[in-house]
Length: 484
Image (cartoon, rainbow, N blue to C red; front, top):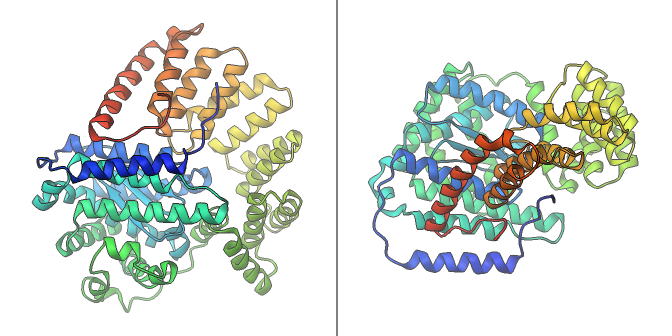
């Protein structure tokens, strides 16, 4: 059993993209988009994005993010299909919705907004595009939105996501990829001013029902309007894919222009600091945090942010120094203890890592991340039985937003004599990361291993579902990562 490989060579992606571009030139009949087709399009897009490794999988941020998303969905009422929300690593400011209930928010958007309500406003607007079924309702879109249009979009994702060459190149490639993705998807949606007005109105209703202030939608769009140009220096993604934002600010949201500013949102600002530290170019993050520390040496969040930057750069001694200072200023933070645990694992100090993860859980930060970290610490310390229990716990709560837990648990069980369980968890990992061929391979391996009968029903269902998914991908002309 092996770990997932990195994205393929640039040349292969380029050839693949060109082939699909040629397919787009061929005339095709119009496709009537129904609800099931919307769901399938969403699955295909998500699989391609997940396979590029650009989803932001930090459990601390995702737990917070999904709590906000849950509030919006509750306000929106029952839906005919489940919604899925993801944060994408990108230095490009944008957000976009995909047919079938998939909503994506760029990490730079989180870095640019001021409070939780503004983030909820962006999400409400994107959810409203889906609940309004703008993709399916517009006749012009239905004429042009063939499955091969989708294939071309996904080829762009594969091409831009395959770059390498260091942090700067990777960040640029991700920004271009996600910017192109968002623009292409919204072009397929063919958002008109009327669509945007409807999404504004419906999204605003969701926002208020969720307990947020309508001023947050005005504030969010004002930030997007002002900062898009500053961040990109060219055509801003959110403005180009959501037309008329400037005029909508002056009309639809005019009643909120003079509303008093929202109070300082400490919880959101802490999450924003974390996203900045873990996703922005390290030089930029360091500059921002250092400036804050020069103004306030007791800024624990800035200290911790610098520690996370040092951790990314593998300067473990500096990371330790900065994180220790942050914990001294904020001793009740379970998140800080969790990060110290991760740092101790990097420094090959499993006993220290276990102490930090245990402290985090005692402080109420009992998450999938702490369970996984503690499992790894116990495994390295020879406490195999305790590690087994915690790997089981981590894998059970991983879902598709923290697939690393599925992978590491699968490797652990496979290496400790439980081959069927190990293969099944690796199958779950590959399914979550957009590699259906590898997922099927490990399901079959699970069934061929001792105890595999325990996974017969689940593997049979998963294999049938993924084979149908792969056949749809083939019909769309979409290449999939994994075994040939």
